[in-house]
View 1: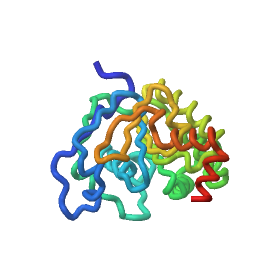
View 2: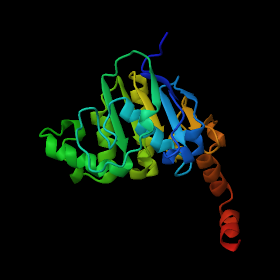
View 3: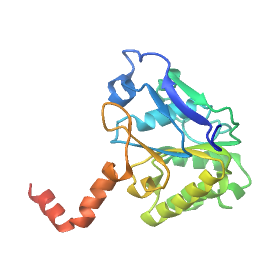
View 4: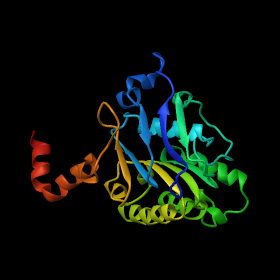
Length: 241
């Protein structure tokens, strides 16, 4: 039986990566065989350049979502610098129809907001006002709160970049509501706050192969814990080494 709200059960690469593709140099991508998505919320973590955002973008492309951000109906492009990892990727779809989709990227959110302003006369799905007239964090949260309708697939790339710690907690509440409303969320993040979400799968891209990791073993959690518990000693060592 397919779990409610799971639209992508997993993925694999259909063939070996070509030698000239830059992402062949990224070990977690090069060694990728198969990933399973059996929970409504999945986190992708890893250092910058580890391949998590590249994989998220490829998932979006394969699902028919604008790789620069937005939904399937957001037809705009300001740059053609997407990787062709999607050409090698096979999604294992559950067969359940996703009634809604959205790819939210922190780095291209301005472009999405501009497209919304140029395309829509009704801002009821975006907090009643133009996203450009709202603060960065406010517009980010309002887009999720009002535009994400549920019963959908939502891909988020480093959403914490726009949010204070308090607003990350507000985002956690929204993500929880969406997951209970038959939604699947795949999120690339560095945030120890977001990673604390209960009943989520965390995939780490920090080793040669992608692997599941417990929350308490994630670098964002470990680093934050180390600073908070030994702040004076931590900074003494940092500045005197």
